[in-house]
Length: 418
Image (spheres, rainbow, N blue to C red):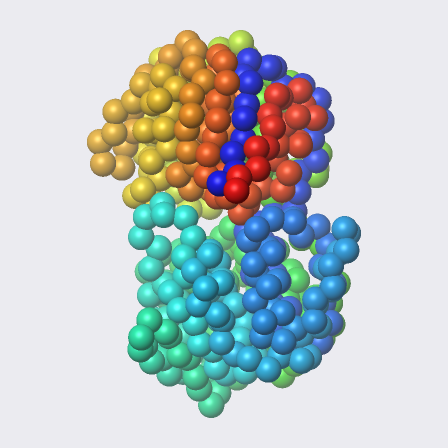
């Protein structure tokens, strides 16, 4: 297993360019199935999750050409409608491919997805929605088979504003007969990005970014060329990296509007932040102040940023309180930070963090993708050397995080595993 070796205590300084969004790229890559034609995508991050998604596209018959600046997908030659189980288990987002396959071919076979163990993330909302669209679903031997003669537009009221379910409904219904209305839809910027790309293909969709999205089915979609939005969670991660090291960093290719709650909490903690349309500049205080955080669906504080800002708060002055309202296992990272001297108490979905003046380097492991990022941040601030193991999680969602941090003055090296 590979790991990062970090020598802490270096103040980060300089400029960093934020990569394309992981969470926008995956459904956008899936959407390339729908046009039965060519798709050119720009700003796709070269990370494990996008690599796996492209691998699945190749498996089902797509032709994929990849260069340093773009990915070309030709979906005219798809012959298979089954997502292989071993690839499905590597990450949860593979379930998005089901909606695209159903949308185009009226059938798909897949297994329950894998991914980070951050709590229950059932796909029952996806399956319930598929049934409402007239899709027959059979489950046997761990496989889910979806098939129908036609997809008919309908009204779908989500019990929870699930990002994945909202995306899957959109992908499954863009070529449906009639109108589909999603009520209590997720409002995340990644959904807006997916819809903008589908509209460029010729889809008729309105209401993206609000709680009600309407999809008017069309007969066919056309070739498209599209640039994916910047990664708001990576942007938040680098802001927190600057904050925990007392640094001064400018983020290029970052959209402040997408992470307003993160910026607000860092300002509340004592950081000075300047923004314009596509950049964010942060100057951290010598020691930050404790804050209170509650994770919520967008536009609230993102659950993906909870463990990352949690690492920052373990060295903040005073007592911080974090309430996790989305995933029940998001606090696993705290027991790892405890090895470095962090003090906390957990009561159900609430973590009470008492700030310490200094963390000490230790051997820790990534508990999940964002938990791994929190270990890296803690290592940047700690006295001595930190070894972060299980970084395969981190490689799922961050493009060259070690190189980007090194450019800002961090001492971080990748130690290759067996």
